[in-house]
Structures are given as structure tokens and as C-alpha cells.
Amino acid sequence: WGGGGIGCAYSAGLIMENTFAENSADSVGGGIGVGWQSSLAMVENTMAGNVAPFGGAVWCDSACTVTMINSILWGDSAALGREICMENRYEVYVAPGCVLNWGDGNIDAFPEFVLRSKQDYRLLWGSPCIDAGHPDTLDPDNTRCDMGAYYFDQTEYMTLYLSPDGAVVVPGGLLGVTYTVINRWAQPETFWVQTEVQLPGGGTLNVIGPDRYTLPPDFTVQRYLTHNVPMGAPLGLYAYRSRIGVPPFMIYDEYHFPFWVVAP
Image 1 (cartoon, one colour):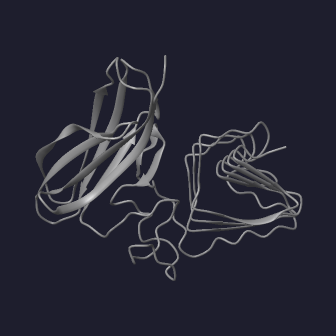
Image 2: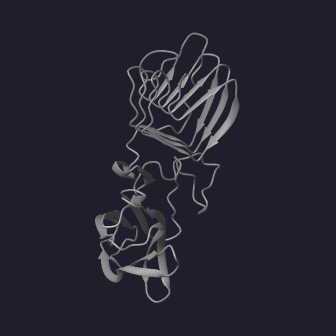
Image 3: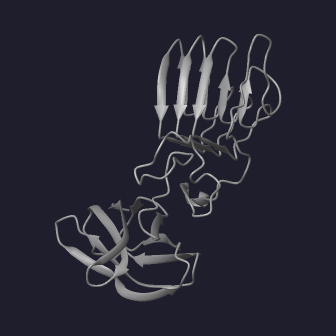
């Protein structure tokens, strides 16, 4: 019926802190289709790269209600209603009997995602979506709420993101990872990077560092690295973990992700 990610009919609910990306629908609502007297609240979601003939991100029929707060809709596409379609026509069309309220605080600006090509929809420092959500809502770091599914953690002035090429590799293959490091300090910052891989049977393998780097003030850098997976690597679930900081005790940030080594 509709909704590349979710289709709602005769229902009411809350959708919170989700990413709807690269979905498609044959008819309506590349991300979400809302119909048949449904009432939906969408809070802190990111919708990007979704496709449908009507309503690239969201389609809503005339008997429904959708309330959207602190969310990002960007880069979706449709023949009618690139982001939102209410029954018919162009960017946002309000069908007879419908009311569309464009609330205070809505913006039209590039969100500055970390790496959309890898479907990493977290926010880079400098994104207009940071501290731009509803002023009465705080993120876990006690700053004003950010827009979208992921908040930018301002606890430390150095931030690390890892964006893997995928979650599955084979023995003899390559594991590709994009490192994003952000320095929000007003002065150059020297730090060390260390990366380990946790093996399926226990134990860890050091794969990077600790290596020393210096970032200029208020600067973001991205580097793409590849790791050779040995032909004799045991099959199973691994964990890739990286940290940035100043040895021996200062850790600015850390991030990890799982990946599988499977038979060819």
C-alpha cells in the first residue's frame, strides 16, 4: 500500500530516534506512509535518500495527523512532494480540508552528515542541526536538543567517528573504515590513536598505534583505512574498537562496531 520504511493504517503511535534512509515505495511515502485515520508523532528522526512517486520522505492522507519534532528530512526525492506530500502536489501540498502548520524553528539547510555515502547520518560539528531542536528539550550531554536521530556529544572537545564499509568480510578480504576526528578546541590539539580488534574466541589484536597526531584548531579530518583480513582468520563475530586521547589515562572519545568474518 505504501511506506518504504513504515506503513501506518488505522493506528496511532510514536516513532522516536530512528533513521529512515535509502528506502523506496512503489506508490506513496518513500520513508513513511500514513493513511486510514492514523495519528503519528515523529520525534528526533532522520529521513534521507528515500524515494517514492508521492512523498519522498512522508506521505499523509487527508484523514490523518502527523506531528514532527526535532527531525531531519533531507535529500529525499519524489515526482510530487520531494520531502512531504499531503495527498497531492509539489513540495508540500495541503489538500482541501487539511491544515499544515509550519512551526517556529524549522530550517532549510544542509545537515552536514558525517558520511552519507556510507549511510552514516550522524552530525559533523558545524551542522545547523546542532542545538537547533526544541529549546525545552536537552540532549544527554545537557546541551539543547539537536535535530535528527543522533545528537552531537559536546562532553569533550575531541570527537571520534568510525564509518565501516560494511559488517561482513571474508578471509583474505579487506575491512575498510573511515575515521573522522573533530577538534573543537580553539588551539591545536595533540592526541594519540589506538585501535584493537576483539577476536571471536577472546583476546585482542592491536591493529593501529598508539600513533601520535596533531589537529589544527576547530578542524575536522577524515581518513580512509583498510585492514587485510588474514586467510587463516577464524570465522565469527569480531569487535573493532578505537580510542583517541593522551596516554596513559586521558581518553577523549572512543567508538566500536561489530563485524563478521564469514566463509566465501
